[in-house]
Image (cartoon, rainbow, N blue to C red; front, side):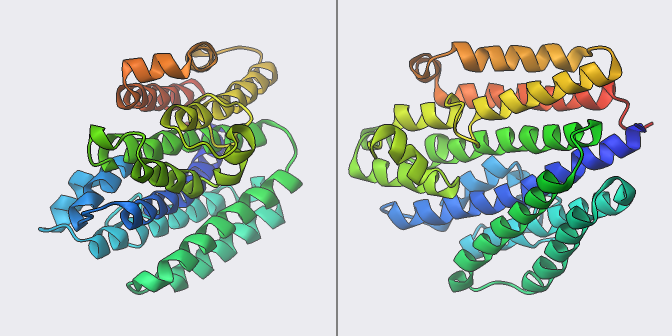
Length: 313
């Protein structure tokens, strides 16, 4: 496969996943704001920080308000990670590799772009946000579903899936960081009713509330929730699940191309960490520090895949 085709597919699905996950970050911020005593607009610094756009936001806004932060994350074209920018970039990559996609996948992508472009053409009212977030998740799910149900399981599929799960792992870790690093008012609140409500909000934002209840009988303990979203391999948005899929798809590429690259060793090492560490060890290290290190290693893997498979040639 030409490197630019692999690049187009990889980034198409990274952008689609990122669009959904930025919407999930906004959802997390909204949900936590409803449960936090003494909530203020300044709390959106944490959401912007976890989205990786805090400094960029400050360059175009002198003050921070919830409305401006939400607008910047959802529809601002100056923000390359806004939902609208990601949907646009995903669609552009899909158009670039149109002949490598099934008709169903292309139509789902194009329809998502048309719908969301219309919905995000003007600033949104707070009352419209829950519906919009639901639409974004639905549209992104339709693209993945059309792709999963119609594509050959070949290297085209593998590069697309790797892009999806690298982005998902990055965003799950960032959503966790919103809660633990920034949004909890103080150490004294750990284990309180407020703490539990905020953790429940995070679970809902990653569509994990019901499945968590099946595993832990609805017992909202920070260690259990961190374990579920980091180490529980049956949870489809957990870091462990994402790395099972990344390693698996990289393995298929190694078979197809007759060799391994540096990215295989990095992915294996990250997966090994997630299999061998316990949540108690992670908490002892510091959840924020663990997540920060994970984001860095995940980004390193992405760069190694790009270099190893010559994405720009």
